[in-house]
Length: 75
Image (cartoon, rainbow, N blue to C red; front, side):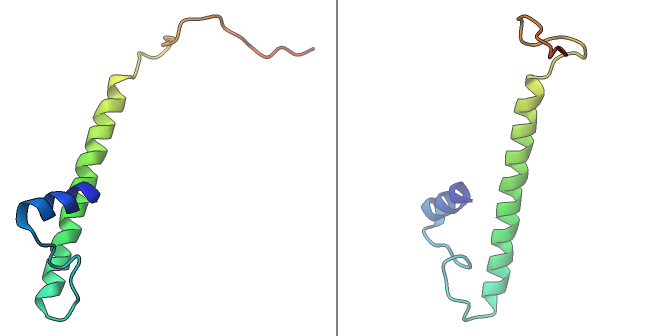
């Protein structure tokens, strides 16, 4: 949300609907636009995170970390 807010502030110079007082009817439409923008950024971040975690997956039955197998024995 900070990246979207700062990016919009740098690009347009104002944050209507986000940092303004709800004193006119247009404010509702401006606020809804912010919700869409934040939702899009959240979806993009989630897709990026999913793509990055898929890279690290290994085939079933393989051990991604080599080393000794340690089991808990019953004494």
